[in-house]
Image (cartoon, rainbow over all chains, first blue to last red; front, top):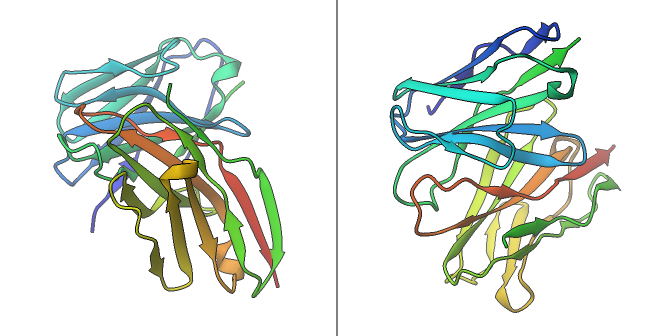
Amino acid sequence: DVKVTQSSRYLVKRTGEKVFLECVQDMDHENMFWYRQDPGLGLRLIYFSYDVKMKEKGDIPEGYSVSREKKERFSLILESASTNQTSMYLCASSLALATYNEQFFGPGTRLTVL
Amino acid sequence: AQKVTQAQTEISVVEKEDVTLDCVYETRDTTYYLFWYKQPPSGELVFLIRRNSFDEQNEISGRYSWNFQKSTSSFNFTITASQVVDSAVYFCALSEAGQAGTALIFGKGTTLSVSS
């Protein structure tokens, strides 16, 4: 069964802390994505990666960075967490080349920044 | 510009009622793909269906059916005889072809509440 896992379901951090959100997929997918979900705004793309060490900015990359050192792992980094980054973070993966391939999502990490 | 609009923010129905969730999209591409996802209270998005722009045939899967009309740029989702377990947030999404790694563009979602 296909699986995308995220390191934490719930996370509480303080303003200014460096935060790492980890995502691992076991489907050998080339593409991986980080979205942010906020009430009334739907899902917004932060960053995506279509290969190891490759990354592309999405719609709202400010305040975030990413790392993809291995194919199965895609990390989202908040260099200095702020309260406006309190949100639900969703990781997804999909096969390469054909953009019609559906994305598979992890369970999400609900991050609270105090 | 690409855009997905789900005009219904929240819908409440009683069990066994039929309900239709609307989705209108905008794209300049002639080749594109449309999706519906379900997000139950547990939080994980579950893929329901994919449709490409060349296939306007409607699809039925159990109590679920989808109506794709290019003329009105709509991809509506109907649940027949709704059940409490259908309560979730439903997202419509768009993907344009031709670019590796292209992300999905999501609508803002429709929250469906089914009461017994």
